[in-house]
Image (cartoon, rainbow, N blue to C red):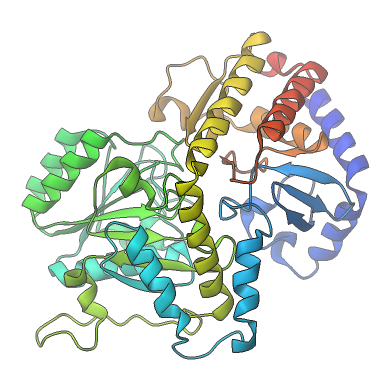
Amino acid sequence: MKDIQQEVFTAYRKRTPASGAYHERARRSLAGGTTGNLRYFPPYPFYETGGRGARVTDLDGNEYIDCFLCNGPLLLGHNHPDVIAAIDRYSQTGPLVVNPPIIVDAAELVQETVPCAERVRFLNSGTESVIMAVRYARAYTGKDKIVKFYGHYHGQDDQFLAGLGPTADTFGAGIPGRITADTIHVGYGDFAALEKTIREHRDIAAVILDPAMHAGGLWGSSRDYLQALRELTTIHNIVLIFDEVITGFRLAPGGGQSYYGVTPDLATLGKAIAAGEKLAAVTGREEIMRVVDPLAPAGTPRVFQSGTANDGTAAIAASIGAINSYRDLDADSGYGHLFTIGEKLAAGIRQAFKKRNIPCHVNQFGPMLQIFLSAEKPAFENYIGLDPEVLSLFFLALINEGVILTLPTSGHIYLSFAHTHEDIDEIIRKVNLVLDKYDFSSLI
């Protein structure tokens, strides 16, 4: 392992000396030299200076095919002309004014596109949207407990940074145990366990889920299971929340709820909603969203929710450009292309590893992929504890060849509408090149 690691690290240092020097400077001001844990990877991270379409450039002038896309927001690729044009159109408004008229245009677009969106509230991040969706559900029902599934990630609020693996353990330090006391964890797909949990707890306000089960390995959902959840939560007056920060606009313009044909009570949106600008939203039934309506009838529970930059001009304008683009692409079979190149890349990666007798499983769901180096039966419980070290080294070796399949600390692979079949062919060629250059089979 050490020999291959040293060889890959040496090649990386030779390719990215400016980033190496910049990281030393960055560490003197930024904690860890970056703005997030995923952005750091050994021996040091590169620093990107710009991108266009499916390509991005680093501080050393190296160009890469980008399949990380800043962890997913850039579903249209870097610097999409429709998004940039929308931002430019409203540039004279200024970065922030109170209640800009375009906020209504954006909300109406979300209403027209997302099935559950009878009402919309814009916010700044996926984490914030989850916090608010859960607060709305608690206020509406008058109950406190939330059901969350193992392997589902719902942002960085303390109450949800638990159960990312097969136990209810918290993820990282600094989270008091009492914070997660009202979060109940259940195995995803185990309908009997969920029914039992609901029978035992009469104070469940909401069930929340990610239709992609993205953080747990991209295991997806089934329509039958989601429909059963819809019926069960309706019977017990429990709010069903789809966390569509990942699946929103990515599987269809209307997100996972459109893809599966199951409409939740509330949904959270983020990432792709503004194609890279900072924006998120809670959408859902008017009756529930009424808890933040100052004109709601007397007796309606009142939730406080506000935010200084919730209607930032650039972000709202970007969402208008992005959502209109998704709708146009959908009308022009763009989502078919997105799914096709996802399937093509997954098949190419599987074949490359199989050719070298390296056990490999690839989960692919639309334009999203995750790779597992294991001969075990594919399952969340079997794969969640796999050592990521070899895969991380593989991803760094690909970076040395001009392909950011994902960051070595992430494992999440995303494709955009900007990726072409030629890009996919090039990525597969580079995957084979890396596997020929380094004997990864000796590390498994």
